[in-house]
Length: 109
Image (cartoon, rainbow, N blue to C red; front, top):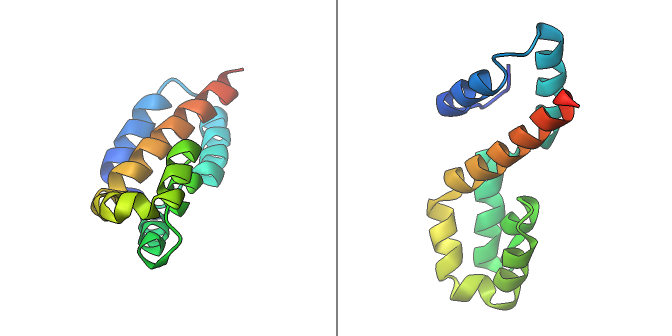
């Protein structure tokens, strides 16, 4: 289905699309796959914050306000970046859930 998908995410997507026809599921998956962020890429973007590009991971996950704060405070003095490096999977999961709901709403139109 989707490369690198976690079992929790697969279960959640199956529940979200359970009422869809196969055609709608295919459209949903194609749209979702283009918007989904891989947790490993979020980790890489987060680690960039430790070498001077703080907040990139927040910009990539559409958290522009936090990205600006991280950028101007050096990742909230590196502490926020370190915490985000530990919680990178949650950051990716939260973003992917929001995007899945948006994709689902687009398909339902």
